Picture (cartoon, rainbow, N blue to C red):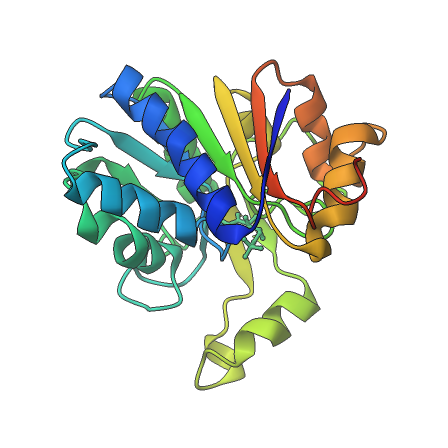
Length: 242
Ligand code: F6R
């Protein structure tokens, strides 16, 4: 495992973008596993900037995202598909037909998850999986307690997540109660993992994930068993590690 420390969010974003760029340059038809959330936004901005300068070409890239809310269409501004379009896909020359996000509109959870596992297999597996980390050590929507051997599955969102999301919707009924997420098994099958974390709220999770016991109670702790993990984090997120 390699750990790079960045000064601040911008520096971390730039370093992470450098690593992702190297993947794209070394393998122009790479399969990138992508994430949403606040952490990768700066990295995506940097990639867009380098694309606009002519340094990056996404034309042969395929992407598979970690997760999506069940019940939301890609037009919904709270969906992860919408997020990806806004924060990356609409600004680079990626072929959108090769950008995959679990199908939030598929009501049959078993089908949605089986279809997504099939997508990941059909594209030949993930070359580099980008991950953010939750304050409790979650990756994707794999919350503490999830079995490590799961592939894509449907999760019930916790009461606190549902409440936190409520402010983005007109009524409680519209707030998604479930999500589809790649499982730990899909994530661990990626050839390389790039984990990005900033801020003191991630310090405890990062310490436990990288140096604590490997346990489903800290989902990201399984990454200790992966042979190619790069962590890019700022001083605050690494504060318990030095
Ligand atoms: C996003 C995802 C989540 C986030 C994590 C960190 O697709 O699967 O696991 O990576 O919740 O979120 P931020 O970056 O907002 O702190």
